Image (tube, rainbow, N blue to C red):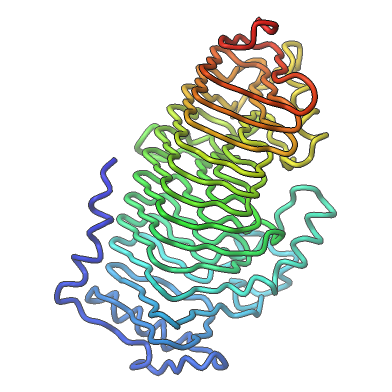
Length: 432
């Protein structure tokens, strides 16, 4: 997976490149006055020459900002870039934010059609999400699974060579880091934090990106720790998301590592390895549904440790905004996945060639589920050296070529496996 270009960005920019100190442009770092104009002037100047925009220790309150090309944004130890808490500052056309569509919002930090962009610490970017989360939770309780539109903390699109490293991102109003249609992305040694119950606070959401490395990150948030998305096809490669590696990361609260729910553009060549999950809702998940699905293939999960995760594995073509902890929702999805279920066309989820090895998990409720569609089964899934202790067993519906080697599912109650319209080998003798 060629990541060298992104890893060498800072070296290229650091040799003889100018440093633009935001205080030289009028920023004070007092945390009380808006520094937007001064910071943007520094970013604009840096974009003309390439170099580094530097934040000395202090708290810099700002409205939304635009990144520039060939620019490193560096927050020193003790420096905090603090997002405005005023919702109107993020609305492009004004109005009531509670009635606005998602397109109406500007991210706190954004950029488009750039190259060689670095965001680095050890300082902090703080989105002050507490000013947004209460209304989002009220909306979600009224309509299960509803995402109240809000701005993302960082959204960078069509960037070639993006590096985010050694920095803390926290308290985003919605998603924290969203690279979109980027190529050559490295996210390294990043801490991403939000309260466990902060609605829709995904940590890292690569959307239609290629050549992505996420490594040595610690993530504790209220939604997906990582969500790989391919929401639509675009000109060029057959797969919108391709060559993505998540390695040596620790996931605390959150919804695990997901592919989906948008997969219509296609996802392939994803590796998740040497990662630890603790107290997450979901572990490894591929999620989509009719109208939003596409081909997901060649996915590898290796050397995974999970503690208090519910469930360990979820691959479903019936994702309908149901939580993994919603046992009734999970059961209904499996019950509907019968050979006689009505068939639909368009945007069909298709999952194949998935390899899981060396996984150990404790799951208070369910071990997991694999649920394909009757017209498009989940196919060629290998589980090898997998041990799961759980409240209930593993459900597999509409599966073809499910291969289990040295797999132990140990439920407190019920059968270890529940099969429906599935062909599998390596199951206990009484299930063959």
